[in-house]
Amino acid sequence: MPALAALSWWDGPLPDDSVPALHDLLHLCLAVLTALIALSAVVLLAVLAARSGASMVSSGAPRRASGPRAPPPTAVRLASLCVLRN
Image (cartoon, rainbow, N blue to C red; front, side, top):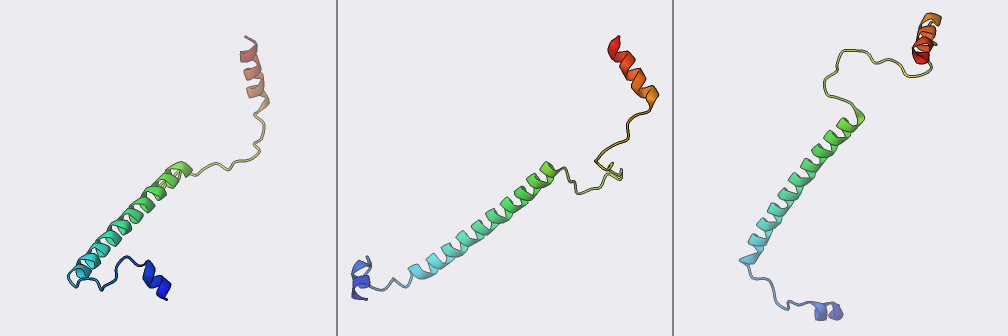
């Protein structure tokens, strides 16, 4: 342990009046960091919810299932072909 003592820049005990001030400063820094972490979590959740398209309020309209659909009736297909040729 003598090598560790030689590396220290302070050879004496800390003054008694600086310890409570440092302790209060530590509490202030921890409170600010906690608030920043909470704020960033809220922002991250909002961004993820907006990106996924999920909303907090349901729209009430059911979503159609994605997947293969049946082809349109023959009349609809013929009408689209006529429109495309003209």
